[in-house]
Image (tube, rainbow, N blue to C red; front, side):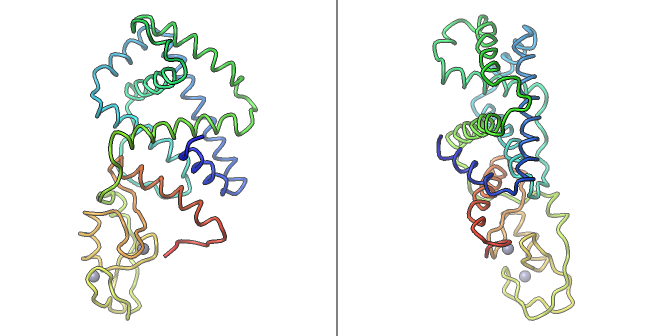
Length: 270
Ligand SMILES: [Zn+2]
Ligand SMILES: [Zn+2]
């Protein structure tokens, strides 16, 4: 197991049993859906050729972005307890097929490099044979124990993370998601506290902005701030963003925080 896999496992281990069981259930349905789709792709020459052609038409940058989006949907599933309001659209059907095929090709190349030393025309038969073997080794998937489904799912997430962080440096400032910003609640200042952005007092009775971490700011100060960054000026709490890579970074930190706050820590850390 690599470092990313271990981190995700450790984060999931902090969940209470009912949440873990819900999560396992969602992962089960999602895995089943993806496997059925991949089986359909490998069974139909037309679907297979279309997806392969789609993959060939993508630049490395587009492929990275596609894997990043796929990774994001997996990470969202793993961090269901947190807010996920942003405008990142779901993956289109043809791209979803292309990324399933791409990930399957990467996996085959890793475990069985010789299998792809034929012309792409022959790939489908080879991949289909290998895929049937994988399915057999997993059993039918009904009533299987948590680990046998969770682990392959998490390993795919870790593989995508390696790919995405290898191709593009994750990090840097990104704007908070517009849909999140417009949904931020107002609070009434009690007076005496200062706004950490302008260092001026928030006078009592005034409407101020409250971030999910409970920190308060003048509306006129926080709005321009969130156009440039998605973090709280006081505690660096991360708001959702419309940037795919920024969002991956945020959800990854949510997982890390799950581990660090599980040792008796309550609520948000300052
Ligand atoms: Zn201010
Ligand atoms: Zn804060």
